[in-house]
Amino acid sequence: MKKLLIVLAIASVSVASFAQEDPTLKHSVATNSFWSNWFVQAGANWNAWYTATEHGFDLNKSPLKKFRSNPGAAVAVGKWFTPGLGLRLKAQGIWGKKVAGAGAEENEGNSNKYWILNGHVMFNLSNLICGYSDSRVVNVIPFVGGGLGRTMTYDLYAMDLSAGVQVQFRINKNFGVHVEAGWNRLEGDIDGTDYGYGNRGWDSHDNNVYAELGLTYNLGKATWNKVPDVDAIKAAHQAAIDALNAKLRDAEAENARLKALLDKPVEKEVVSESVKEFITTPVSVFFNLAKTNVANPKDLVNVRALAKYAKDNNSNILVTGYADSSTGTPAINEKLSIARAETVKGELVNMGVAAEKIKTAHNGGVKILGVDLPIDFDRRATVQITE
Image 1 (cartoon, rainbow, N blue to C red):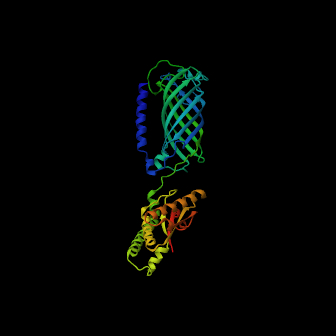
Image 2: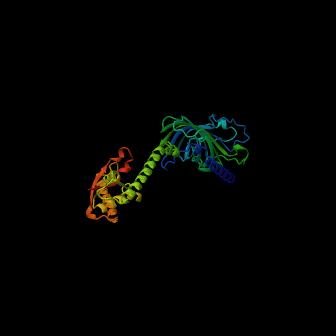
Image 3: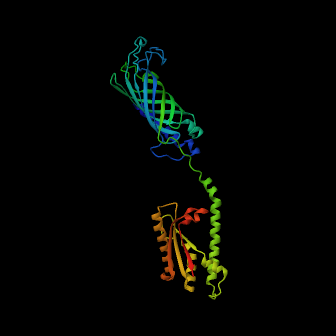
Protein backbone atom coordinates (compact mmCIF):
# COMPACT_ATOMS: atom_id res chain seq x y z
CA MET A 1 0.00 0.00 0.00
CA LYS A 2 2.87 2.37 0.78
CA LYS A 3 4.29 1.90 -2.71
CA LEU A 4 0.82 2.52 -4.19
CA LEU A 5 0.48 5.85 -2.38
CA ILE A 6 3.98 6.94 -3.48
CA VAL A 7 3.22 6.10 -7.13
CA LEU A 8 -0.12 7.95 -6.96
CA ALA A 9 1.58 11.02 -5.49
CA ILE A 10 4.20 11.03 -8.27
CA ALA A 11 1.45 10.58 -10.88
CA SER A 12 -0.50 13.54 -9.41
CA VAL A 13 2.55 15.83 -9.61
CA SER A 14 3.17 14.72 -13.20
CA VAL A 15 -0.44 15.38 -14.18
CA ALA A 16 -0.38 18.87 -12.62
CA SER A 17 2.86 19.68 -14.44
CA PHE A 18 1.46 18.39 -17.73
CA ALA A 19 -1.69 20.51 -17.31
CA GLN A 20 0.31 23.68 -16.58
CA GLU A 21 2.44 23.19 -19.70
CA ASP A 22 -0.53 22.33 -21.91
CA PRO A 23 0.58 23.24 -25.46
CA THR A 24 -3.04 23.86 -26.48
CA LEU A 25 -2.49 27.33 -25.03
CA LYS A 26 -0.87 28.06 -28.38
CA HIS A 27 -4.20 27.20 -30.02
CA SER A 28 -6.57 28.92 -27.60
CA VAL A 29 -10.15 27.72 -27.31
CA ALA A 30 -13.03 29.19 -25.36
CA THR A 31 -13.93 27.49 -22.08
CA ASN A 32 -17.11 25.43 -22.32
CA SER A 33 -19.70 25.01 -19.59
CA PHE A 34 -19.53 22.17 -17.06
CA TRP A 35 -22.22 20.26 -18.97
CA SER A 36 -20.31 20.28 -22.25
CA ASN A 37 -17.79 17.71 -23.57
CA TRP A 38 -19.07 14.69 -21.63
CA PHE A 39 -18.81 11.25 -23.21
CA VAL A 40 -19.83 7.64 -22.57
CA GLN A 41 -18.05 4.53 -23.82
CA ALA A 42 -18.97 0.86 -24.12
CA GLY A 43 -16.79 -1.93 -25.40
CA ALA A 44 -15.90 -5.60 -25.51
CA ASN A 45 -12.43 -6.81 -24.59
CA TRP A 46 -10.18 -9.82 -24.35
CA ASN A 47 -8.51 -9.90 -20.93
CA ALA A 48 -5.73 -12.06 -19.57
CA TRP A 49 -4.58 -12.62 -15.96
CA TYR A 50 -0.99 -13.01 -14.74
CA THR A 51 -1.25 -14.23 -11.17
CA ALA A 52 1.03 -13.47 -8.23
CA THR A 53 1.70 -17.20 -7.84
CA GLU A 54 3.25 -17.73 -11.28
CA HIS A 55 6.78 -16.60 -10.45
CA GLY A 56 9.28 -19.33 -11.06
CA PHE A 57 6.94 -21.77 -12.79
CA ASP A 58 8.07 -20.90 -16.34
CA LEU A 59 4.52 -20.62 -17.64
CA ASN A 60 4.01 -19.43 -21.19
CA LYS A 61 3.27 -15.70 -20.92
CA SER A 62 1.06 -15.44 -24.00
CA PRO A 63 -2.25 -13.64 -23.20
CA LEU A 64 -3.94 -15.78 -25.84
CA LYS A 65 -3.53 -19.04 -23.94
CA LYS A 66 -6.92 -20.46 -23.06
CA PHE A 67 -5.98 -21.10 -19.45
CA ARG A 68 -5.41 -17.41 -18.75
CA SER A 69 -7.78 -15.37 -20.98
CA ASN A 70 -11.47 -14.72 -21.44
CA PRO A 71 -13.76 -12.15 -23.09
CA GLY A 72 -15.00 -9.23 -21.01
CA ALA A 73 -16.98 -5.99 -21.20
CA ALA A 74 -16.40 -2.38 -20.18
CA VAL A 75 -18.37 0.85 -19.73
CA ALA A 76 -17.06 4.33 -18.95
CA VAL A 77 -18.22 7.91 -18.49
CA GLY A 78 -15.95 10.94 -18.65
CA LYS A 79 -15.48 14.62 -19.47
CA TRP A 80 -12.89 16.66 -21.37
CA PHE A 81 -11.96 19.81 -19.42
CA THR A 82 -9.69 21.06 -22.21
CA PRO A 83 -9.12 19.61 -25.69
CA GLY A 84 -6.06 17.84 -24.28
CA LEU A 85 -6.99 16.91 -20.70
CA GLY A 86 -9.91 14.81 -19.45
CA LEU A 87 -11.09 12.46 -16.70
CA ARG A 88 -13.15 9.27 -16.87
CA LEU A 89 -14.53 6.56 -14.60
CA LYS A 90 -14.31 3.06 -16.10
CA ALA A 91 -15.74 -0.28 -14.98
CA GLN A 92 -14.63 -3.52 -16.63
CA GLY A 93 -14.63 -7.24 -16.00
CA ILE A 94 -17.29 -10.01 -15.77
CA TRP A 95 -15.30 -13.10 -16.82
CA GLY A 96 -11.70 -13.91 -16.02
CA LYS A 97 -9.43 -16.91 -15.50
CA LYS A 98 -7.69 -18.02 -12.30
CA VAL A 99 -4.10 -19.10 -12.96
CA ALA A 100 -2.83 -21.40 -10.23
CA GLY A 101 0.88 -21.79 -10.83
CA ALA A 102 2.43 -25.02 -12.09
CA GLY A 103 0.18 -27.09 -14.28
CA ALA A 104 -2.10 -24.18 -15.11
CA GLU A 105 -2.30 -25.34 -18.70
CA GLU A 106 -4.17 -28.42 -17.48
CA ASN A 107 -6.42 -26.29 -15.27
CA GLU A 108 -8.40 -24.70 -18.12
CA GLY A 109 -11.83 -23.24 -17.41
CA ASN A 110 -10.98 -22.19 -13.84
CA SER A 111 -13.24 -19.11 -13.94
CA ASN A 112 -12.90 -16.04 -11.76
CA LYS A 113 -15.73 -13.55 -12.04
CA TYR A 114 -14.50 -10.05 -11.20
CA TRP A 115 -14.82 -6.32 -11.75
CA ILE A 116 -12.31 -3.45 -11.72
CA LEU A 117 -13.33 0.21 -11.23
CA ASN A 118 -10.73 2.83 -12.18
CA GLY A 119 -10.50 6.60 -12.44
CA HIS A 120 -8.30 7.71 -15.33
CA VAL A 121 -6.59 10.97 -16.29
CA MET A 122 -6.64 11.12 -20.10
CA PHE A 123 -4.25 13.05 -22.37
CA ASN A 124 -5.25 13.68 -25.98
CA LEU A 125 -1.77 13.83 -27.50
CA SER A 126 -3.14 14.72 -30.93
CA ASN A 127 -4.64 17.96 -29.56
CA LEU A 128 -1.78 18.65 -27.15
CA ILE A 129 0.92 18.35 -29.80
CA CYS A 130 -0.82 19.37 -33.04
CA GLY A 131 -3.43 21.79 -31.69
CA TYR A 132 -7.19 21.32 -31.47
CA SER A 133 -9.15 20.34 -34.58
CA ASP A 134 -12.83 19.33 -34.53
CA SER A 135 -12.43 17.44 -37.83
CA ARG A 136 -9.42 15.29 -36.92
CA VAL A 137 -10.16 11.62 -37.72
CA VAL A 138 -7.64 9.93 -35.38
CA ASN A 139 -6.85 10.92 -31.80
CA VAL A 140 -4.22 9.16 -29.68
CA ILE A 141 -5.09 9.22 -25.97
CA PRO A 142 -2.81 7.71 -23.28
CA PHE A 143 -4.25 7.42 -19.75
CA VAL A 144 -3.12 6.66 -16.20
CA GLY A 145 -5.04 6.14 -12.98
CA GLY A 146 -6.00 3.77 -10.24
CA GLY A 147 -8.90 2.29 -8.38
CA LEU A 148 -10.32 -0.88 -6.85
CA GLY A 149 -10.94 -4.45 -7.97
CA ARG A 150 -13.04 -7.31 -6.60
CA THR A 151 -13.45 -10.98 -7.33
CA MET A 152 -17.01 -12.13 -6.78
CA THR A 153 -15.92 -15.75 -7.02
CA TYR A 154 -13.64 -15.50 -3.97
CA ASP A 155 -15.01 -12.30 -2.37
CA LEU A 156 -11.64 -10.52 -2.30
CA TYR A 157 -10.75 -6.85 -2.89
CA ALA A 158 -7.54 -5.14 -4.04
CA MET A 159 -6.33 -1.63 -4.89
CA ASP A 160 -4.80 -1.20 -8.33
CA LEU A 161 -2.85 1.08 -10.63
CA SER A 162 -3.88 1.35 -14.26
CA ALA A 163 -2.32 2.61 -17.49
CA GLY A 164 -2.89 2.25 -21.20
CA VAL A 165 -3.54 3.99 -24.49
CA GLN A 166 -6.70 4.54 -26.50
CA VAL A 167 -6.97 5.42 -30.17
CA GLN A 168 -10.25 7.05 -31.27
CA PHE A 169 -11.52 7.14 -34.84
CA ARG A 170 -14.05 9.91 -35.51
CA ILE A 171 -17.26 8.96 -37.34
CA ASN A 172 -19.07 12.29 -36.77
CA LYS A 173 -19.19 14.94 -34.06
CA ASN A 174 -21.09 12.60 -31.71
CA PHE A 175 -19.91 9.07 -32.54
CA GLY A 176 -16.51 7.43 -32.70
CA VAL A 177 -14.92 3.98 -32.62
CA HIS A 178 -12.09 3.31 -30.19
CA VAL A 179 -9.48 0.63 -29.68
CA GLU A 180 -7.74 0.44 -26.33
CA ALA A 181 -4.94 -1.55 -24.71
CA GLY A 182 -4.41 -1.40 -20.95
CA TRP A 183 -2.79 -2.88 -17.88
CA ASN A 184 -4.23 -3.11 -14.35
CA ARG A 185 -1.72 -3.97 -11.60
CA LEU A 186 -3.51 -5.05 -8.43
CA GLU A 187 -1.74 -4.74 -5.08
CA GLY A 188 -3.31 -7.77 -3.43
CA ASP A 189 -4.72 -11.16 -4.28
CA ILE A 190 -7.80 -10.98 -6.50
CA ASP A 191 -7.76 -14.37 -8.21
CA GLY A 192 -8.25 -16.39 -5.03
CA THR A 193 -4.82 -18.00 -5.11
CA ASP A 194 -1.98 -16.66 -2.94
CA TYR A 195 0.95 -18.92 -2.19
CA GLY A 196 2.86 -16.16 -0.41
CA TYR A 197 5.75 -15.77 -2.80
CA GLY A 198 6.13 -12.10 -1.82
CA ASN A 199 7.37 -9.27 -4.00
CA ARG A 200 9.41 -11.07 -6.65
CA GLY A 201 9.37 -9.23 -9.95
CA TRP A 202 6.59 -7.62 -11.96
CA ASP A 203 4.37 -10.69 -11.54
CA SER A 204 4.55 -10.61 -7.73
CA HIS A 205 1.13 -8.91 -7.93
CA ASP A 206 -1.99 -9.97 -9.77
CA ASN A 207 -1.90 -8.35 -13.21
CA ASN A 208 -4.64 -7.94 -15.78
CA VAL A 209 -3.98 -6.92 -19.40
CA TYR A 210 -6.64 -6.35 -22.00
CA ALA A 211 -7.38 -5.23 -25.55
CA GLU A 212 -10.72 -3.52 -26.19
CA LEU A 213 -12.88 -2.46 -29.13
CA GLY A 214 -15.81 -0.13 -28.48
CA LEU A 215 -17.95 2.89 -29.28
CA THR A 216 -17.66 6.43 -27.90
CA TYR A 217 -20.68 8.75 -27.79
CA ASN A 218 -20.23 12.47 -27.08
CA LEU A 219 -23.01 14.03 -25.04
CA GLY A 220 -24.30 17.53 -25.85
CA LYS A 221 -21.74 20.03 -27.16
CA ALA A 222 -18.68 18.01 -28.15
CA THR A 223 -16.57 20.68 -29.87
CA TRP A 224 -14.58 23.72 -28.74
CA ASN A 225 -14.90 27.23 -30.13
CA LYS A 226 -11.74 29.14 -30.87
CA VAL A 227 -11.22 32.30 -28.83
CA PRO A 228 -12.21 35.33 -30.93
CA ASP A 229 -9.26 37.32 -32.26
CA VAL A 230 -9.89 40.64 -30.51
CA ASP A 231 -7.10 42.39 -32.41
CA ALA A 232 -8.58 41.34 -35.74
CA ILE A 233 -12.04 42.54 -34.69
CA LYS A 234 -10.62 45.88 -33.58
CA ALA A 235 -8.72 46.25 -36.84
CA ALA A 236 -11.85 45.50 -38.88
CA HIS A 237 -13.81 48.23 -37.09
CA GLN A 238 -11.03 50.77 -36.64
CA ALA A 239 -11.88 52.61 -39.86
CA ALA A 240 -15.51 53.04 -38.76
CA ILE A 241 -14.41 54.17 -35.29
CA ASP A 242 -11.99 56.72 -36.79
CA ALA A 243 -14.71 58.03 -39.10
CA LEU A 244 -17.16 58.50 -36.23
CA ASN A 245 -14.48 60.23 -34.13
CA ALA A 246 -13.74 62.58 -37.02
CA LYS A 247 -17.44 63.42 -37.36
CA LEU A 248 -17.63 64.05 -33.62
CA ARG A 249 -14.67 66.43 -33.73
CA ASP A 250 -16.17 68.28 -36.71
CA ALA A 251 -19.53 68.55 -34.92
CA GLU A 252 -17.91 69.89 -31.75
CA ALA A 253 -16.00 72.50 -33.79
CA GLU A 254 -19.18 73.53 -35.62
CA ASN A 255 -21.07 73.71 -32.33
CA ALA A 256 -18.45 76.02 -30.87
CA ARG A 257 -18.55 78.23 -33.96
CA LEU A 258 -22.35 78.50 -33.91
CA LYS A 259 -22.44 79.13 -30.18
CA ALA A 260 -20.00 81.99 -30.61
CA LEU A 261 -22.14 83.31 -33.46
CA LEU A 262 -25.29 83.21 -31.32
CA ASP A 263 -23.53 84.98 -28.44
CA LYS A 264 -22.57 87.84 -30.80
CA PRO A 265 -24.99 90.79 -30.55
CA VAL A 266 -27.12 90.95 -33.70
CA GLU A 267 -30.21 92.76 -34.67
CA LYS A 268 -33.25 90.51 -34.55
CA GLU A 269 -34.21 91.42 -38.07
CA VAL A 270 -30.73 90.58 -39.39
CA VAL A 271 -30.07 86.88 -39.01
CA SER A 272 -27.26 85.21 -40.92
CA GLU A 273 -27.91 82.20 -43.11
CA SER A 274 -25.78 80.06 -40.75
CA VAL A 275 -27.94 80.99 -37.76
CA LYS A 276 -31.13 80.28 -39.71
CA GLU A 277 -29.80 76.86 -40.66
CA PHE A 278 -28.82 76.18 -37.04
CA ILE A 279 -32.15 77.10 -35.46
CA THR A 280 -34.22 75.21 -38.03
CA THR A 281 -32.14 72.00 -37.88
CA PRO A 282 -33.15 69.50 -35.16
CA VAL A 283 -30.53 68.90 -32.48
CA SER A 284 -30.23 65.31 -31.22
CA VAL A 285 -29.82 64.15 -27.62
CA PHE A 286 -28.92 60.45 -27.36
CA PHE A 287 -29.90 57.80 -24.80
CA ASN A 288 -28.62 54.33 -23.87
CA LEU A 289 -30.67 51.17 -24.45
CA ALA A 290 -33.89 51.17 -22.36
CA LYS A 291 -32.76 54.36 -20.53
CA THR A 292 -34.47 57.75 -20.21
CA ASN A 293 -31.58 59.76 -18.78
CA VAL A 294 -29.25 61.64 -21.15
CA ALA A 295 -26.32 59.38 -22.09
CA ASN A 296 -23.72 62.13 -22.50
CA PRO A 297 -23.95 65.67 -21.05
CA LYS A 298 -22.05 66.93 -24.11
CA ASP A 299 -25.26 66.44 -26.12
CA LEU A 300 -26.81 69.34 -24.16
CA VAL A 301 -24.30 71.91 -25.51
CA ASN A 302 -26.33 72.47 -28.67
CA VAL A 303 -29.57 72.32 -26.70
CA ARG A 304 -28.28 75.13 -24.47
CA ALA A 305 -27.55 77.23 -27.58
CA LEU A 306 -31.10 76.64 -28.87
CA ALA A 307 -32.53 77.48 -25.45
CA LYS A 308 -30.67 80.80 -25.44
CA TYR A 309 -31.96 81.65 -28.90
CA ALA A 310 -35.52 80.71 -27.93
CA LYS A 311 -35.39 82.93 -24.84
CA ASP A 312 -33.90 85.86 -26.75
CA ASN A 313 -36.45 85.59 -29.53
CA ASN A 314 -39.49 84.33 -27.60
CA SER A 315 -39.54 81.27 -29.87
CA ASN A 316 -41.36 77.99 -29.39
CA ILE A 317 -39.52 74.68 -29.13
CA LEU A 318 -40.62 71.20 -30.24
CA VAL A 319 -39.08 68.16 -28.51
CA THR A 320 -39.69 64.74 -30.15
CA GLY A 321 -38.76 61.45 -28.48
CA TYR A 322 -37.74 58.25 -30.27
CA ALA A 323 -36.81 54.63 -29.49
CA ASP A 324 -35.16 52.15 -31.86
CA SER A 325 -37.44 49.57 -33.51
CA SER A 326 -34.98 46.66 -33.30
CA THR A 327 -35.33 46.19 -29.52
CA GLY A 328 -38.30 46.20 -27.18
CA THR A 329 -42.01 45.85 -27.84
CA PRO A 330 -44.09 48.65 -29.44
CA ALA A 331 -45.65 49.42 -26.04
CA ILE A 332 -42.25 49.72 -24.34
CA ASN A 333 -40.86 51.87 -27.18
CA GLU A 334 -43.90 54.17 -26.95
CA LYS A 335 -43.25 54.74 -23.24
CA LEU A 336 -39.52 55.26 -23.82
CA SER A 337 -40.09 57.86 -26.54
CA ILE A 338 -42.53 59.81 -24.32
CA ALA A 339 -40.18 59.69 -21.31
CA ARG A 340 -37.17 60.79 -23.37
CA ALA A 341 -39.07 63.81 -24.71
CA GLU A 342 -40.08 64.74 -21.16
CA THR A 343 -36.46 64.39 -19.97
CA VAL A 344 -35.21 66.87 -22.57
CA LYS A 345 -38.12 69.22 -21.86
CA GLY A 346 -37.05 69.21 -18.21
CA GLU A 347 -33.50 70.14 -19.24
CA LEU A 348 -34.83 73.06 -21.31
CA VAL A 349 -36.89 74.30 -18.35
CA ASN A 350 -33.73 74.11 -16.20
CA MET A 351 -32.04 76.28 -18.83
CA GLY A 352 -34.69 78.98 -18.38
CA VAL A 353 -37.14 78.21 -21.20
CA ALA A 354 -40.76 78.65 -20.11
CA ALA A 355 -42.60 75.32 -20.00
CA GLU A 356 -45.52 76.69 -22.02
CA LYS A 357 -43.09 77.49 -24.87
CA ILE A 358 -42.15 73.79 -25.16
CA LYS A 359 -44.24 71.22 -26.97
CA THR A 360 -43.44 67.47 -26.88
CA ALA A 361 -44.14 64.68 -29.32
CA HIS A 362 -43.17 61.02 -29.50
CA ASN A 363 -42.57 58.57 -32.31
CA GLY A 364 -42.25 55.13 -30.66
CA GLY A 365 -39.80 52.68 -32.24
CA VAL A 366 -38.18 53.84 -35.48
CA LYS A 367 -35.33 52.99 -37.82
CA ILE A 368 -34.30 56.31 -39.30
CA LEU A 369 -30.65 56.96 -38.51
CA GLY A 370 -29.98 53.23 -38.27
CA VAL A 371 -29.97 52.89 -42.07
CA ASP A 372 -26.41 54.18 -42.42
CA LEU A 373 -25.42 54.38 -38.75
CA PRO A 374 -25.61 51.95 -35.82
CA ILE A 375 -29.19 51.31 -34.65
CA ASP A 376 -28.45 52.83 -31.23
CA PHE A 377 -28.38 56.27 -32.92
CA ASP A 378 -32.18 56.04 -33.12
CA ARG A 379 -32.40 56.08 -29.30
CA ARG A 380 -32.71 59.88 -29.07
CA ALA A 381 -34.82 62.98 -28.70
CA THR A 382 -34.69 65.93 -31.11
CA VAL A 383 -34.97 69.62 -30.20
CA GLN A 384 -36.12 72.12 -32.81
CA ILE A 385 -37.07 75.83 -32.90
CA THR A 386 -40.56 76.41 -34.27
CA GLU A 387 -41.32 80.01 -35.23
